[in-house]
Image: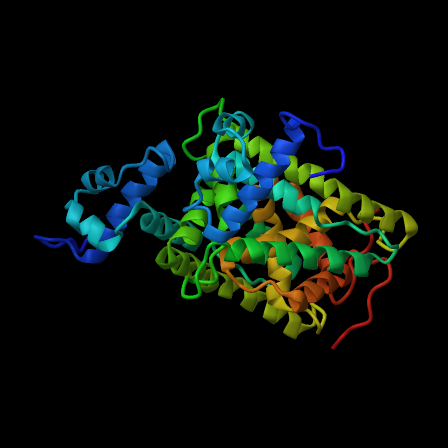
Length: 210
Length: 210
């Protein structure tokens, strides 16, 4: 732990971090189906009641884990919007591919969306999980939307560009491939995607709307 | 049925169509959770074994229903790629919003992805359902990809545009909003999305790569 470890019961943030660390190891080793809440408590060295008070179900714990994984990916705003988007989306793609592969053995279908699909399904089934997932993405996406706003203010993106619509096109393409078509999302695809979104598909540019 | 109705056991396509019609009514009235396979057989007037032989689980039946709903949406290639994309994506958005609302009462969270999330989760859990879902979208998307290829051949899309990447950006944004962020997907959003994808976000267009 840290150098400021105290005797007795650790602070709840310490317990949370230990639980999340243990849960992440177990989930990534076994997959969602074979992950058992109680084992995460044992591995983290906390009482089961501590775990369940904080995260009442596997789905709630999964949301917290996704938040942890997202927070580990920095959003760098270097002033080169093409490069910044490419780096950030490549990191998202890497994270999605990792979640896709979780708990899968070599002979399982590697086009399945894996744990991300479980998150999406839990969000659809349980209103509180849904609120947590949507809140998580809203909070996280704020960072990249600010980056796009800055690029527009600098004049690197055209005045009529909506940061939200642009980011939907980019992140959306990655999630669509992961969750729906099963097509690969690799670094070459990300570069191509960013290029398409910045350049536009029309041969003759549409007149600016604002 | 049709004017060529015969005596005795109906052809299996007739049974399939009756089962799908009955299943669609039940599913859309009750939602995925409260949908019971046996009731679809009773309502369609077929033996349960006929139903289960054709679609062994609720998930398999859901895939067939989504195929039916998709096939009801025409892909019109009128020569105006902006208009054609807008009409087609608006139809997809309408279908997704309908599946989102299935089985939901007024007081349930209307930002949930509903039945589409069940489809995605089933595709991730069961390799055969996953293959069916990915095959369904691959087959269906062929039509709109051909439309985009024609637009590029006519010179309405720039030579460097990949039909697949362009369509990923468009369909992807709709599914991302439905499944992840919960943001609305309405006709105004679709128009904005098509405009962004065709125009491009960069203030200074990137040099053509091919």
